Length: 403
Ligand code: F6P
Image 1 (cartoon, rainbow, N blue to C red):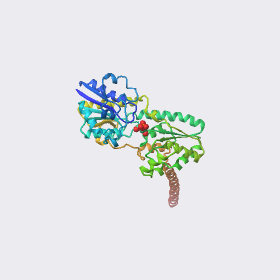
Image 2 (image 1 turned 180 degrees about the vertical axis):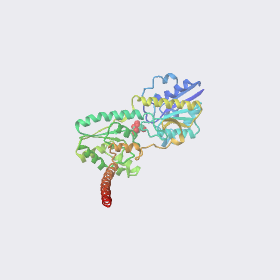
Image 3 (image 1 turned 60 degrees about the vertical axis):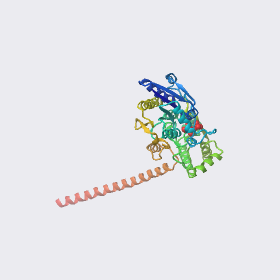
Image 4 (image 1 turned 135 degrees about the horizontal axis):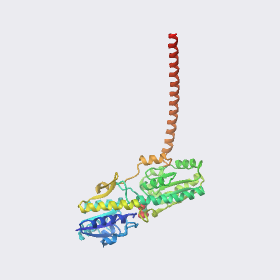
């Protein structure tokens, strides 16, 4: 008999239900008897002992259902060791409820913050298995998180729709895509929808570059699509300390970085600029087929670990294989987009501007290469001409000698 606690924590995303269903179905198909305790609203349920006993029926028909049947909440790791407003020690409370229910393990579905707390609970001696969820795809130790592909689909559809109206009106459109810390979602949705400019937190942008890209586009078409991550940052702002930047954002008259950028572009280009924010729609609705399959596989592998009594792991995906990753290797690390990543280089080769000045630099490199290529071919030509002239002079001399 296995007694399993389960919770979903942090921002929700698509395929949380599919993943939990994967765990439960796999357990049910095994010889092992199982009891499932679902903690409600994330770690909050574990802290305050709010749970429901669940049966196979609860997990039936939820493969395609968005959100989470357990509910979720954000319980910041930063304050997890602080007592709550009534003086309750939250970590001790979680341990207490785990032991009170005599659980064999906890299955925790979450993103970065969730994994820090999960690792803390492991260090405290609890048996933990985690599953990687987040539309941001920024969890270390896994190439993919569930929720990401569904969110890419939604953000892409949004930019696709914007394309037609932007083209009709000849406007510059900014679509603000989710992702405060990393730009995976913006990069992928931007590339999938043919955005002209992509701005992500990992690559600070130079406004002059963006204006130049818009002006350059004007020669052939009169609209521009810019995919901007929530956390996109200018070169100047990137030089500020964390505290200074937080203050700047707090004092800003704009609701988000996109609106500030829009105002600046409109002022500099005189072109109409509009902002669209798909916001939480990116986390909502039914998971895409990829996420349904992916989350089911991860859930199934999590059940296998539990059946074998292997704990302290996140079930992740590396180099096209489902793998188990030690929690201590995951917690507290971020998987961000490297500015030198192949995908970024390829996007640049496709003509997408990242506002980092590199496009310009690469253009002039190309020019230089072209020029030196021309110089080289001129030299080759004259060398060839010289050698064929030398050869014919030599032939003539030979002929004269013979004659
Ligand atoms: O972590 C996922 C995420 O959707 C981010 O992309 C986004 O910035 C944030 O959550 C939004 O958080 P909340 O739902 O708390 O507003």
